[in-house]
Length: 275
Ligand SMILES: NC(=O)c1ccc[n+]([C@@H]2O[C@H](COP(=O)([O-])OP(=O)(O)OC[C@H]3O[C@@H](n4cnc5c(N)ncnc54)[C@H](OP(=O)(O)O)[C@@H]3O)[C@@H](O)[C@H]2O)c1
Image (cartoon, rainbow, N blue to C red; front, side, top):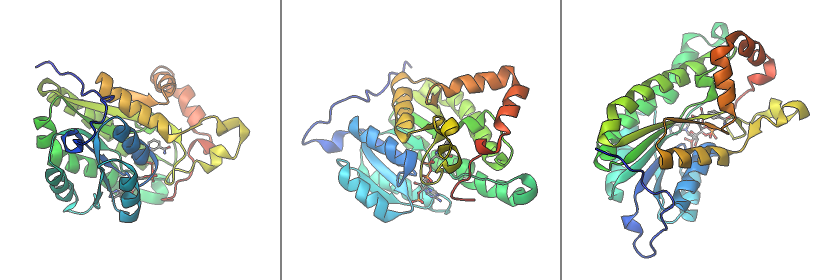
């Protein structure tokens, strides 16, 4: 079957908001998820906003036409089924699923150990699989449709002090690649977003922003919304955000020792609010 992208620049039809395609965005209460949700709403989607902080979601839902706040803990056993129930209640076709919720996962292995890796994998990897499993039938039924994963440049390049985080994002990239090959023929596009350093609540990038020499490395959440929009429109497999980070990933493949030296600098592993 030939798959065509759902037009993300379709105008909102006034008076028929329920006929708009649905988009689920996890981690929509702040940072990158909020920026993606705003963008998809601007582009004509009815957005289901998923996170734990109900007050944040309600405030955002109030700004976005027809948006629905879905309070859910994606680590809880009933998290995925709560999101599926919200999709069913909203009606219509689930054209886009954005798996974005994630945490930083810092600390060396000697400090954080297996428990640190496990905690990071639980949200950044396992929870994304569980939600995708619950929503896959609905996304398939809506084909041509898209599943996006917010991974990281850390899913291509590992740094000291961020091994748990890299493990979760490398795993996500590999699994998404297989899912892409499995679902493509049925019209479900699977896209991976690889952000670099973006200042958000969870990843404030304090160390990089403090210095004139590194401030320029820090991007804005809207760059990730650009990448999401690009992937949905083009149905390409992956997009760095901003796109220039692709050069670093390519350099890591051809000159791994050089890149290992660059990322070993302490400011290249800024602290997160989960530290
Ligand atoms: N910022 C960066 O530099 C950067 C770079 C590369 C990749 N990323 C990735 O981008 C994604 C978003 O990060 P961000 O920068 O936007 O961070 P953020 O501002 O801390 O946002 C994280 C989001 O995840 C939600 N969340 C956390 N635990 C959850 C749970 N158990 N159930 C449901 N939702 C949960 C949070 O909402 P509640 O607390 O309300 O539940 C929040 O909305 C992550 O996957 C991160 O790894 C970020």
